[in-house]
Image (cartoon, rainbow, N blue to C red):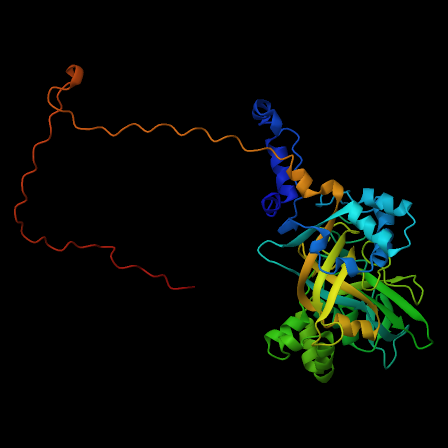
Length: 475
């Protein structure tokens, strides 16, 4: 019953808002009912529902490599304990600090001990969007792309860094910017207009300003790097330039794969990044129109990483292939563990490979929205890209929350509702008084019988001036 009662709850911000708005006015009521003071409300996740579960209810939990997951989690603990990022407004808040202190202080080196760590410091909750039974995952990777430090006959497509005239309200020039919301460019001293869209930038709106990091062979290569958020650019002399997401132009991302499905060009069951690239390479004019249907454009920054270092996620730590995921940063705290279980086409397009892994939220993306939505990181290169490009599937989600936020324990402190007041006895219906009422009561006369109706002439049909409806012509 406790689990069922906790499944649907208001958002944390709503609960806090009600508490603050009504706090001053409800002091008399609180004084009348002291048990309503200092209520510890259960975990609340916007647009999400959850069900407390046991570890034995997570399919494949006992078979996973918990030591690998522990190492990934421990890497997330460095920025968590350093206090980077604002976590207070999110459901988990700062609760990960306690298990992170334990992780950083321990020297766990075996699988059983790593599993015991998670089972001691966390409780699992099956989570999904309200009204749904599963979550949803896609895959991403870091492309390895041929490029050049200068423009040549073969390398003609620039990779741009963030322009100086790109402006987001509330942020200073050079600050880390959100990956969503409006973005402007300054015209003159005060005027702000929306930033250039993809078509305008491809047509040269910002060329000649020294923004080029390097050059690629095709716009398709650039588009795929922008979709993934990072890339390794392999130069002709063997050097590798590492680039990471830095900013965007303010337009929402439109999936080009979805457009191809809606137009009937690629069947939904055959959709993959490989199929998208094949079609774009074979249809250059159509590819140009398709790219520009996605008005979003990403700007990069050059990062100082070794050739074999993994890409750095939004949390600021290197990603771990098959263990790191991108999550909705508006809902989840970086470093949160998730156990994801189901079947995915890992080995081939039609395969149903069991996928049961403990993964850590260390990255985000503008298309990753919702309480049970994740992008699985598979590493770098063509092989990782082939797997990532096939993933677009519903799957089971469990979020691991620190024991300090155990909603079942919190639910035991919730106040009971006030007892329902007893129903008032209904008065008996009045009965006609009889002659010579009891105790001298007045005699109530009954009404005289109504005269019988006499036949009447048929009434003339009445005219209803508004019988016909007036339909306005649509404008």
